[in-house]
Amino acid sequence: MREIQFREALREAMVEEMRLDKSVYLIGEEVADYNGAYKVSLGMLEEFGAQRVIDTPIAETGFSGIGVGSAMNGLRPIVEFMTFNFSLVAIDQIINGAAKMYQMSGGQFNIPIVFRGPTGNAGQLGAQHSQNFENWYANTPGLKVVIPSNPYDAKGLLKTAIRDDDPVIFMESELMYGDKGEVPEEEYLIPIGKSKVIHEGKDVTLISFGKMMKVAEEAYYAAKKENIDVELIDLRSVRPIDYNAIINSVKKTNRLVIIEEAWPLASISSEISHHVQRFAFDYLDAPVHRITCEDVPFHYAPTLIKEIIPNVDKAMKAIKAVTYK
Image (cartoon, rainbow, N blue to C red):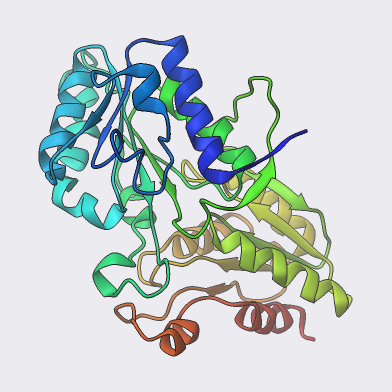
């Protein structure tokens, strides 16, 4: 199987779907002439032309609204945000438009739209460009929220998202676009809402998603060196959440640690913790532990960034706490 970059996997997904369906188009800042801020849309303007790969002004409210309106009229837009921090400008179009239109129209209008771009920190970009919004959007009925952690999942999930008749928030990471992974040449789809067990284990369940899976993978191998058998699960999507997989794993391991990059209040880990204590409380041999970003605006100084984000040391501390080692 060939090995390609994360950005290439995303590009292949969009290109393949645009070749299959002429109603699919890409719109956003610098997606056409500049080939994308992170070169995800490299070469797409040449193949599909300016009517299907559309550069926009710096006007997220405007081009997001165009996307929602065109989806109501039978098209399948892919709306790219240079960063999901900029989606705050368009959040009314997403929350009050895309997410609610099917219900408010009595089922007359599906909104088959994908909003995609990077979320979370990417180093020294400052507090306004380093935020995580997956838990914000996952709080909204009517949306699906997908966060792949590798090129294989990125391609399969994005193809599924483009074909979905509901609005999908598709979140990536600037720090992952250059990551390489095995991706088959033949077509494949990955269902939204289905997690993946990366490593099976019996001592503790470790859950994460997106680029925090890198921290989780490191923690898995660090724990293995200390004879702690970790079951590692990649959620892949945070709305819907694969609760069955989580509960079944906790019933086996009796312990749970969750890693995510967002702030702790109203986080995905909070929701999972609540669900586990409600439906698997009698199986728990230790309190649920979670590792999140510290509850402060994101720092610019690299030394402070290192202190506030999840890392392997924090993960191992939690794993040892629940396994009493």
